[in-house]
Image 1 (cartoon, helix red, strand yellow):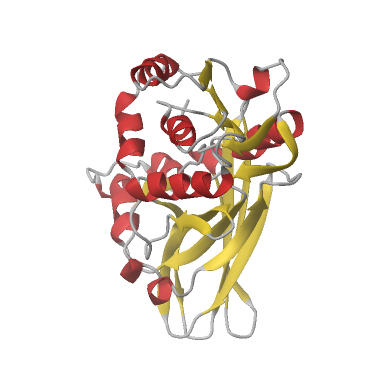
Image 2 (image 1 turned 30 degrees about the horizontal axis):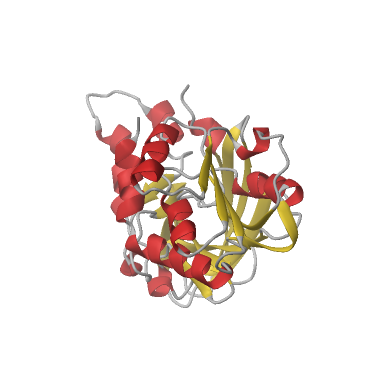
Length: 312
């Protein structure tokens, strides 16, 4: 059982306090019925109960459901009902005022939050009910230092006249969870651009695509791209996983380039990002970077795909 993973969630005070504040803003004591989807050890469900929810239904399909059951019992949470299955598998009638789900990953959508909340919203949520979280904004920015790039090129440094370039190529077709410093990102993160926005309160696609482009204010070598996200739980309450924000257990994602792009002032650097997530196929990521000169002539184009870096 990945109890250590759940400990990192409980230790994340930025996360915990934001979700507590969102529940407090949404719950009408004695009236609100709450569904906690992906309940883990039961923290958010217990928060909802302590804040006065009339009833709380906690969905959890992993082994940690047994821990959640014991936690609920230890807290004498009589208004909390643990349902040991995925919410999409639950066929009984359920009508709730609030759906809450902390199924967010380092790549925000990797735990299939879009499809999960769409199903719950359609089948469980009362008209006018609240979905927590309600919006996700995804950011991207160029990385201008070689720290991570150098680590990924270890294959090229083996020596002994050995060619490990096949493995090197695979390494550069992966995305990496890393904590980046603002100084490692173009203009200290001021260059960050939105590449995707997800509204979880309405119908939206699990397949995402977006792009961003930068005209460089000065010469720079681009080694890859960093992405992160900002979540709005309810209006006015949320948090970010970006390098300039208070640190959470989530970190940024680093998308490598097969070769750094050495750009002059006024050159254009762009990236096109694509993703798809599903319970059956997992998460697929692909990214294409283009370097143009100041006049718009393409100098380099690099296409990367997680499938090319995957080792079964």
